[in-house]
Image 1 (cartoon, each protein chain N blue to C red):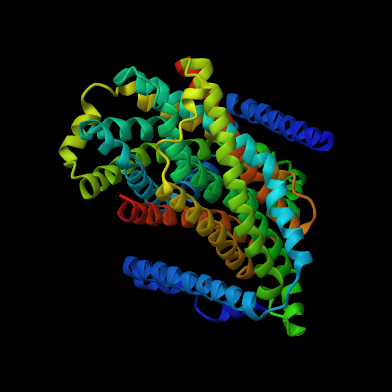
Image 2 (image 1 turned 90 degrees about the horizontal axis):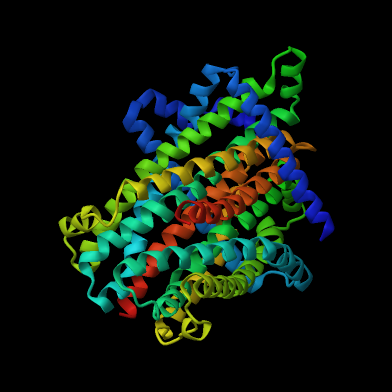
Length: 276
Length: 251
């Protein structure tokens, strides 16, 4: 249905071909604005249904299992390796400048809590969870299951996105705290085996303050909220057959990773000014 | 547990076999040049904007994160060195690979998966055209080349972003930053390590995306699942290989 509509109406691409470079730029900007509007509308409707919609604890638990427990292994492997790489590289370099490695653990822990655990963990969640959400919702759109929901006077956002949204906010926070622990332990083992830094010296909480914790936790919540909204929007705007589902999944991964990086930039910037 | 282990072994085996087949085609120079150029355009040119945005923001974030440490030690002069080291060796290749695994790898899987679902690959076989030399090998090469080139300019852009974030946040003049970058603590080896990593990541990502694309079963949901599997496998592969390359080179 939508495919034939597009055949008649001139698409953005055709218009931009007539208008040249400037038109192409304009079409890109229009695309971006439309995407932003769509995501904003998904977010607002999710929050609206959170307040006034149905309560379904069963679905919430199901999606928490899907999003959280099934990503646990993947996240643990990735964060373990990341922890080893980071401490190894930092140790080798720091030795060239300051031979004293006693503060390595404290600095690493501060960076981990403030930024790295949340950001790298969320990038991984964006690929794992974002792609999953978009693929599921996208194939529902293609097989007209969402249209069937609308016919039953049920908004797909209430049924499909709202439970995923809350499941993702909770599980992203939990998983990121877990992945910080994994990365820290891996770093501790690396520091002990390569640089002879005793685990007792490495576990140094002196540099972590309330500001770091606030920034880190607000990042968890922001990323956890952004991933299902962005990828849910990408899934709902699927059109066409299997190719469309592929496209939607691709866009979900790219856009939610970009959302994580851009949010990171702004939250980190705000953190520097709020907690100097 | 055992099931997932078997699944992993199956994936690794499939990718290994695919790699072998691609290498045979490469050694005999039997691949489609026109398809290679098309893939280069689709993969390389089309992902320029996303790499630029990622690199600039990443450079900025690195300096924001390093700011408290730099202030604590009063090491403004070392900012260029620190950012340069982190970017060239780790963050540049890693983040470029992660973004491209979403943009290019997932896209490639979706395309190949659609071809499988609509039986276009079988049609190629029926016409006695080898799908691996016609479709897969050009994409494989184009993917690696794209990642290599993107890492080159992403490194440069991330350092630019870091330099200006340093000026805005820490009042470190860009000239001081560039001085720290070129004063001898960093050398071509650091750049080379990043570029070697980008090639290794390119190989694993191209293999994962082609393997899962060709293994699609069952219509539109199958394509979605395959794309999901590709990004997960690419991300895990990137980090695990990153570890081994880092150790292998400096150890």
